[in-house]
Image (cartoon, rainbow, N blue to C red; front, side, top):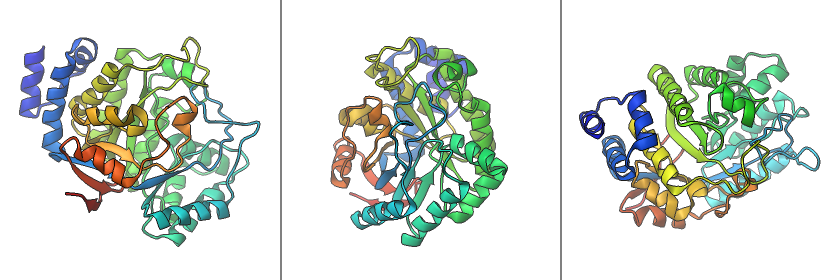
Length: 357
C-alpha cells in the first residue's frame, strides 16, 4: 500500500478513501509526514503563515447547549453591547491587529440587525480590519430568526463588511456522531450546503474537523471526503483546520474528562489532511490546540499555518486547553523561524501583510 500511495503522491495524483483509511489506521507516521511534506512543498514551498488577529466572543448565551461545548453559559452569561465591541476593536487595532475572529452562542435576544451593525461598526473603525465571523450554525440561526433565507443572510452580512467564514461547527459530519455530541445543531449536510452558498456569493472560508471523541476512522474519512467534494465544486475553502477535542466541562456520554488525543493521532490527522485534501492550499497546525512544540512538529507533517495571535481566546480554554490565551507577534515569528520556514503574516484570505526574512 505504501508504494501505491507514494507513486500517487509523487505524481500529484489523488489518493482514494480506502488508501486514506489505511493511512489513518495502519500507516506509518513518519511515512505520512514524508508524503504530506511532498504535497506541502508543491503548494507553498517552505512558507509558513500566521495572522495578527484577535478573538471577539460577543455572547456566551446559547440555546443549543451542545454536549461538546464548554463555552455556553445560560445562567450567568454575558452579551457584549455594540459600543463595547467598538472599544475592543479600537484597542486591538492600536496594537496592530488586522483581523477579528468573531464567534458566539445562539442568543435569542439578539436580532439579526445586531450582527449587521456589528460588521458595519467594525469597518467604520478600521476599513482594513478583516472580519472572519459566524459559523454556518449561526448563519442558519440568523436566517430562521429573521425569516430570511441563508443566502439572503450571507449576502447582507457580506454587504455589511463580512470577509470570510471561520469554518467552525463542522465537528464530524456523520449524523450518528452529531446525535451524540451536538444533537440540536444543524446537520453535516446543512453545514456543507451553507458553505456552498457562501462561496457562491464570494465569501470564502476555512473548514474544520473536530476529532478525538466518539467518531470512528471511517467517519473521519467520510468527513474529509465531503469537504473534498465541495472544494472540487467551489474552490472556496482556504484551509483545513483540524481541531483536537478537549473534554473538560463537556457533557458527551462516555467520554472521560481526561480523554485527550495522542500526539501520534494529532500528527496523523494533520498529515492526512494534507495528503487527502489535495485541493486545499493550506492546512493549519494551531499552536492554541497543539501547543508551541506541537504546532512546530505539525509544520513537519504537512501543515503550513500555525494560527494567529488570538488575543483573549476563551472557547477552547473553557474545555481544558492549557495553552496560553494569546501569543505575541515576535513569539509566533520565532516559532516558525526555528523550524526553518519563512514566516508570512496574512489575513484569512492568505493575502500577505508582512514577510519576515
